[in-house]
Amino acid sequence: MNIAGIILAAGKGTRIKSKDRNKVTLPFLNKPLIIYAVELLSGVANPVVVVVGAFYESVKDALRGHTVVYTHQRKRLGTAHAAKVGLKKLDNYSPTPEMVLISYGDHAMFYSKETVLKLIDLHKTEKAVMSIITTSFDSPNSLAWGRIIRKENNYIVDIVEQKDATQQQLKIKELNAGFYCFDFNFLKNNIKKIKKSKVSGEYYLTDLVKIAADQRNKVVGLKVHFSGVGIGINRYDELEESQKIYVQRGKD
Image (tube, rainbow, N blue to C red):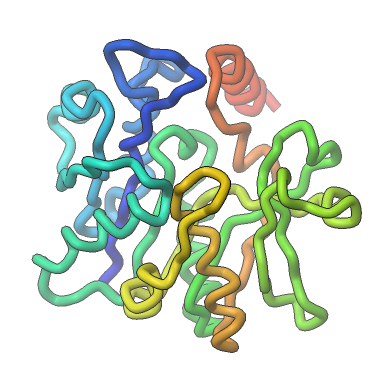
């Protein structure tokens, strides 16, 4: 089974307000955030493609000595555009991968290899085109993550971002945790069908859920306890809070 990995690490990290380094290079318990993502995929995926953009030299410096392949997202037009740039790099590899794992460079610290392997197993067993790690959180509005919409058969048919959610959807506690496994051919054939957001002008990877559902393809979710997911990092206070949660988890 040929599995490739793509790590999205091109974003500017606007809310961090860094003037000289990419957010993914910030130290998390004395180790750059991006290294957690590379270590998570190493041994599971080959190659591991890192999509760089803003302050890309700082990312390459942080990963010196790690075996990864770089590709440059010159215009930062959202997660789907970044994934598309990463996919283009995979055109050079033979044999063609059957699956692609996609992770964010700043949100891989809490995941374990065991969780990733479970996601891959679920993906294969269900013959899904897209598999997502999800989590439940009692106060979902405080995280502002996308809500998972499931059908009666338990398959996922949509991910609704908090800003677009109805009052009813805001009550949903199952959230998108931001780690994906794709069938390579599905991803390659459908990523170009994603439409630009009228609000942000960006292309969102999560739009592939609805595309898959419309094609009657399976999208499945692996629900992981929140302690195995952790909070995302968009501001320095979240970086501090996330490190505290990580350390506490080790003591529990």
